[in-house]
Length: 379
Image (cartoon, rainbow, N blue to C red):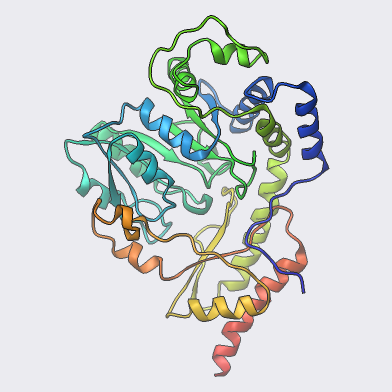
C-alpha cells in the first residue's frame, strides 16, 4: 500500500522547463526572472499601490520586515506562541524581545484582548498568524494597532490566496509576509516576500536584502551588475535567485488550480468528520480560504491513539505546532496566560493535504479517521 505523506509538492514538467530556461539564460543570481516572480505575485494578489519584494526564505522576509519597521534593541513585539519558531527568531535577530500571546479558540489566531493586556510603552509591533490559511480576527488586530500606534507585520505564510471581505490578504494593510518554502501551496524551493505600501519602503527593503547596497537591484533585474554603487546601511544576503524564482513562476501560474483542489479536499474532510463528537473541525467552509494545511482537533485525549491507527494504515500526520514558549531557548520570554494554547496543542492534528490530491488518498484518509471512531463506539 502506498504511503500517504502529509505534504507532496506539485512539481511537473512545466517546472522543469522553467528551470532549464533560467539555466540557459546563464544569469543564476537575482535577475529578470526574480522581477517576473514579483510581478506575478503582485498580479495574483491584485495589488494597487502596494509593492512586492522577494527574499530567499520566509524567515528572511520577516526579519527585514521587522527592520523596516525600525524594530530593535529595547523594543517588544507581540506574537502568538502557537506558531512555528521563525517569527520569534526573526524578532530576536533584531535585538528586540519576544512577547508571546494566547490564541482564540475559534480560529487559532491571536487573541486581541489578551494581546492588549501585554502592551507596554516598549511594544512596537504585533505579528498575527493566519493559521492554516484561515484568517485570524484581522479587524481586531488592525483596531488594536491603531489604538496603540503599533506596526502590524502579518504572518501570512499559511495564507497565500486567502481573502477577507473579497480582498486577498496582502492587498491592503501594513506589512505582509508570505513564504514559498517546499511545503507551501506554491514553492520556489525556498523563498518568501514582503508586501509594503510605498516605493520608499521598497528601496529600503532592496538594500536590506542585498548587503545595504544601493543601485544594484535595478541592474540585477536586467541580468546585469552595478559596478558604481555605495553601501548605505546594514544589509543581509537575502535575495531570491533567478533559478528559485523560475520555480516560483511555474508554480504561481497554477495557483488558482491548486487552491480550488485543496478547498475541495478540505470540504470533503469537514463533511466526513462534522458529526463525530470527538472531532472539532475548522469553522469555515473554505470558500475564502487558501488552505496550506488541514488541521482539526481531536478531543477527549484520543489523538495519540488515532495517530497510531493512521500510521498502521500508512497515513502520515503532523502536529502544528509545539508552542514556542515550550522551547528551551524561549522559555524565559515574556508571555501572558496561555490557557487556550495549552489546550489546543494537545488536540491539533494535521491530515495530509496536497494540490490535486489523489481521490484514493482522500478516501483512505477519511476511512482511516472514521473507522477509528466507529471502532471506539463498538468498544
